[in-house]
Length: 96
Image (cartoon, rainbow, N blue to C red; front, top):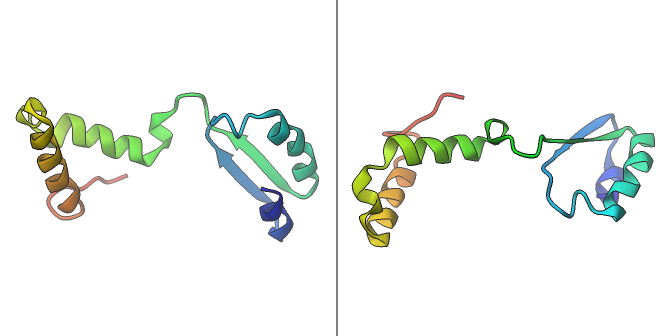
């Protein structure tokens, strides 16, 4: 993160999840120093799937695109999940 901050040339906002490394004492102790260099750190709420596009995609896959028979076996799940992912953007799509 220090290298990133040194390379910034304008005010920058970094949005992070609440990963333990992002909340470590060492990381948190640097936030004020980065702020002085116009790099602001913003943490997502602890659980915010609506702000994470992969969570939206996964919810759509689980509840709309996979049939109940996908869960009969691991092989069925793999096969149907691969089908959905291989056809994402054509047969399966999301408008964000």
